[in-house]
Length: 449
Image (cartoon, rainbow, N blue to C red):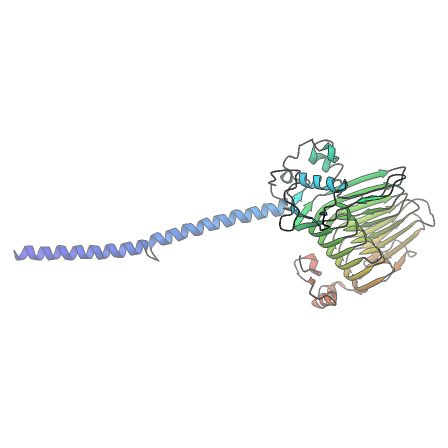
């Protein structure tokens, strides 16, 4: 009996020990620091790492390709109602083509009560990428001016600008301009091609840019790798650039890269990297595009890195240019044969404030006709403040070229210092300029870049 009692006690103790050990094992498995808990945490971290890796790969792909596949349920139809909270959305190249057609044919995007309608770019678009089209092969856009496969035509004959001036013989000039608010949301338009050869017997305005004629607000938009070529044999004024041909509205936080080439023989024109002719307000913008104009007639060309000509009461404020500017004189020598070549502006009648240029300003000529060059402005007839240029930016073809001195010369080293940023910011209520050594070769950039 005594042995059985000991055995029973031993059994009870064993069971208790096993239960204790089981409790410890369960805790080790399921507790805060348990094996199962740690395994679950490791799995979660692995999944998060894999997700982050996929997102990084996607970002890398986007940075290389520039765009993602568009998702537009109604290509060619602008979704939204035009209010600030529910703007019309540009979601594909098809949408952009139809939007341009509507403006060019008289829709100004102004409501009946006189308020501006809102149009919003929903993502970056690339004319050369299939991803930016719902169907790049579609051939039903003839009524919009594109005969053939849409992508193919846009990359051969080019995009038809948003807005136009109509000047028919014997009739009053009609400006079909965009008058709403175009919100780019910081997105980009890649590989915009604008190609025209104008040879008309009657008087016709030529306004070339993504927007041909603007009375509205265009903001937060970049033109990347744009390509403009315009050959003009028209008897009327022309304004050519990458973003806007003629501007009577407001342009903010926009930029242009690529190249602009213009050749004219019969009438004067304004040529710029960002805007051809400005009669409105341009603020916090820049250009890196190369701009070239060829004068082959009895005309005058106003050529500038940012804007060709700044008209009376217009404003150009907190802008800069890094693109090279080239003016070429061809043809027979005549007294009216002139070209004004400026780093920021060709001709100024308005206000210019807080600007700089580091792009090379050069010329070529086959005759002795008048060439005027300036690191900031070739010909200034109004007010400028806080304007600067990199030394030795003007490179004349010969000693008889007229060179105007506007603004203050700086060395490259000086323009990369914080003191220069303070100079540019003087007079601004808030800081518009900053320096990031990894951007723009260390030269100042705008606050939003």
